[in-house]
Amino acid sequence: MTSHELARKLLSMEDMPVTVRGYEGGVNTVTTVAEPRLLALDVYEEWYYGKHEYVDEGIDLDAHNLIKAIHIGV
Image (cartoon, helix red, strand yellow):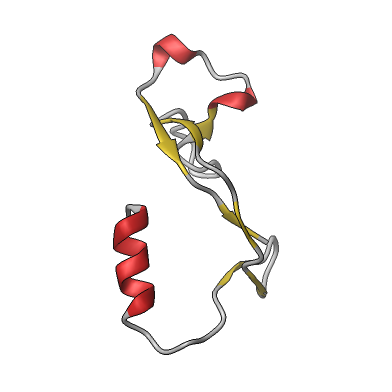
């Protein structure tokens, strides 16, 4: 999903809290939207990792496609 797709979806809804999954259960309210960072695509295949990783996590820049992305957090 792109930032514009997300914005259009959110603007079409009534005003309500936005949540993300908690670590082991429950949900948390979103409190931050970070500045764009470089994201390496398709880094992990293991089911227990997310597919992608931000490049500041020690990723080999030559081995992956890179895009700018924003992270929504709590």
